[in-house]
Length: 129
Image (tube, rainbow, N blue to C red; front, top):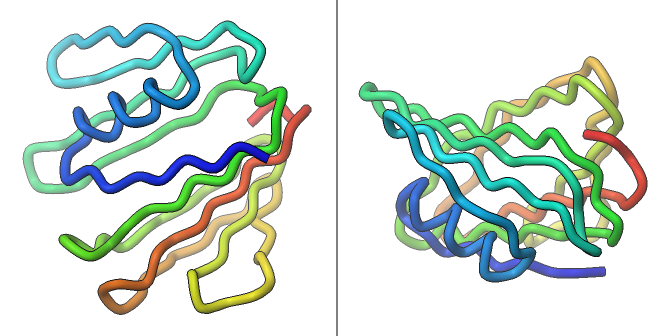
């Protein structure tokens, strides 16, 4: 499993941190960032958008060839996560939990925690998300 620790405070920083771990090329247009990946780790793209009113969107449209764990540090900010899985399934747990909770196709979740509790998001290999 490949673990990626994210500590960025902005979408642009997040895109660059992910790129450092899984490669790919970043393009930006009107504040929307796209990370295109085609390598031994993944194939597809991750899209990032920040809206003027403070909401950010991250969309994974790819297949990972390795199990991926994204660990989001929330020491500096603590966003509410609205998750919707339109294809495949993903898993989430807070740093204090032992077990992951599955978010399967066509299901959603709203996640919030206290500061200093990290979000651990697991994407299994071999599924188009």
